[in-house]
Length: 299
Image 1: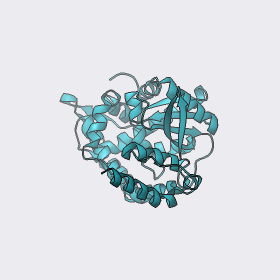
Image 2: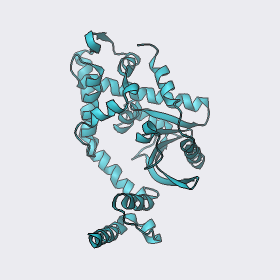
Image 3: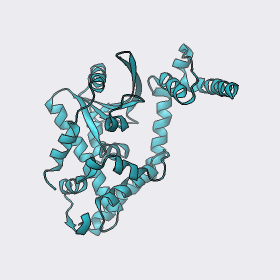
Image 4: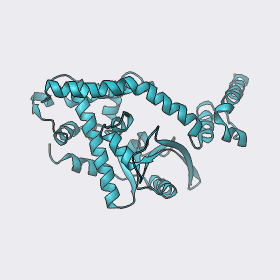
C-alpha cells in the first residue's frame, strides 16, 4: 500500500469522462451556478451514453434543512442523439456534512465510497472541497464496515458487510448478492481503499496472511459506531420513503422521465400532454391504462 487517502481520492475523481458527459455537466453547472458536478453510476464505469446518466450538482450555500436533494430530469442533444440525465442538486456544505456521517442520511457516504468523477469544477478550490468531502465519505463507510464486520477479515468481507447493511436500511429493493457485483465491477477502485480510509480515520489495524486485516477497534469504539448506525438504520426506510414522496411532487421533468422509461421498457409511446407534464402523479393511472391496453392489443 502506498500513498494516502487524499491522493487516492484526487486520482479517482480526476478520471476522464467522455466529452458529451463533460459538456452535459458544464451545462448543468451553468444552469445551477454550481461549484462542482460529480458523475457516478454504471455509465461512469462502462463509458456508455445510453440509459440515464447520473449527476450530483453541488452548489454554494449553507447546510440545508428538510429533505434534500432536489431531483430533476434533463435531456440534451449530442450530434442528433438525445442524452438523458437524472440530476440531484444540493449544497456542497450539506454533501460534506452527510459524507462525514453527521446527518441522518446514509445515501451520500454509501454512494460516494463507490467510484465517481469530478466532471466539472468552478476552480481548484471547489475541486479540493469536493475531494475532501468524498474522502470523508470513505472514512465514514470504512468505520462502519469494520464495526459491522468480523474481528479479522479481508477488506472485501468488510465492504460486503457495509453494503448489505446500507441496502437493507434504505427503501429500495436490490437483488441478493448486489454487494458482490459492486466489488467485482469496481475492483480497481476498492483494492487498497479500506486500509487508506482506516488510517485517515484514525483507526489502526494489523495485517495478517492472505490480505486479512484486524482493525484495532476498541469495544467502546465499536459500540459507539454501532449505536450511531442503529439510529440511522431505524430511520432509513421512513426517511427514504419521505424522499420518494417528496420527489413524486417536486421531481422536475418527472413526466418526461416516466414517459421515456415506459416506452423504453414496454415499447408503448406515451404522448406528453401539457396536463401530464404538470400533473404526473394524477396522470399515472391513465397512462398505465393506456400501456395495458396497448400491450393487450399486441398479444
